[in-house]
Image (tube, rainbow, N blue to C red; front, side, top):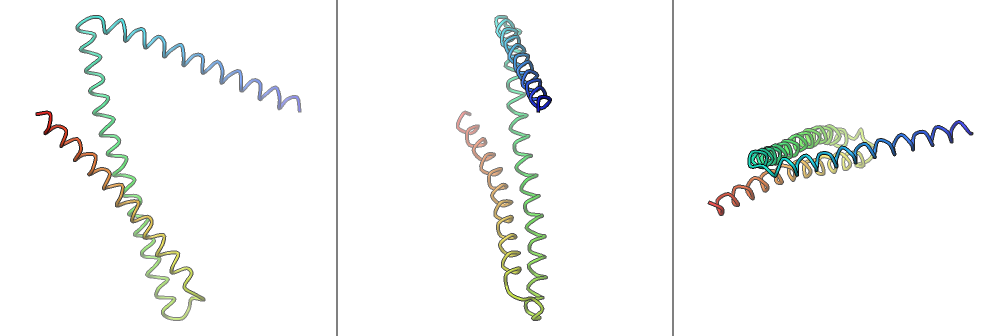
Length: 137
């Protein structure tokens, strides 16, 4: 019992030390950015890094939506094939009831919706960026 308490206390101390280290590193980065921003070159460097990070973040978010959309559509395809197989069994009278068929259809429809909506989000966000660029020009 005491070893468990000691281990929990040690883990808590380690988490506390790690959080203090992260806070100190964050403070040092904020100070470095503030000092760097005082010069013209440093300010340009910071703006360039921010623009690059923003663009990279947007691209990675779009890629994430596209990959998850593809995976959801692939799962929907597997569900649709399962629904066809279950329909064949049900139609041939080998199935005890329509439960598995309905489950497979619902699975396919849900995952198809998730996949399509993920691609819609990609299209909507890229259209929003395109519209904002047209208005700013």
